[in-house]
Image 1 (tube, each protein chain N blue to C red):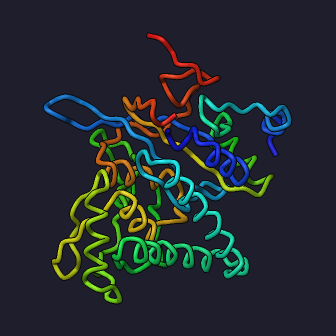
Image 2 (cartoon, chains in turn brown, yellow):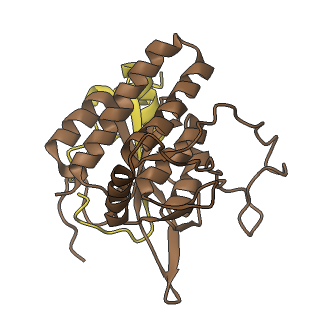
Length: 239
Length: 56
């Protein structure tokens, strides 16, 4: 069963979140042909800044675990930051780095200072597609320091073996040159350790292009239905 | 708050599209409702030729 049809997921998400969808045009070239299509779920603050993301299709247990983590972490960070926005961002990014260390045994530094934003669309810092139009930037992830040194070799190897079994896994290089296996969700935490609390329009390009490996060709657009194979009531559309 | 969004919320006009999640019409509407209800916003980005009935 997919995560989005799971009753527990629905109950929790509807209780803690207001949900919406958009279509993003992406593709990848496989055997000379354009293929592609994927899904990413962004958990955001009401002002559109991304707190967390689930990249790619996942099972219900994983989706629910990530949804609960973001809600509980947001509550804890609101409490600990005492209403200070900069502190909230710092705490949330640190929480991503900590979750990456705890679940994947990989250490990255949380980046708690943001460089200046581009001044306008023509600014040198603005990412553009080949036609010259500014599109979503590809945000640089923080460097991987390396494996968590508090783990035994056996424990780290077990985490690496689990990561190697996850769909979409790949190698990433640490500062030392050592290569470690990372999963799409591990990469999400790596990116979020430096870029969470950034507006969704600046994050989605990184998620699709750097993590899911699909080239985006448009900005997200509102559509009538998120899933082309079912109607509004969930009935399968015959073609 | 936008009156249209208020009306939407009052009417309970959200759809699941075969999922257990209630979706409103756009991220903008979701953000306005989330602010009012003190909730987070979930934005689903569906891309390309993705057609996986297993998802829903």
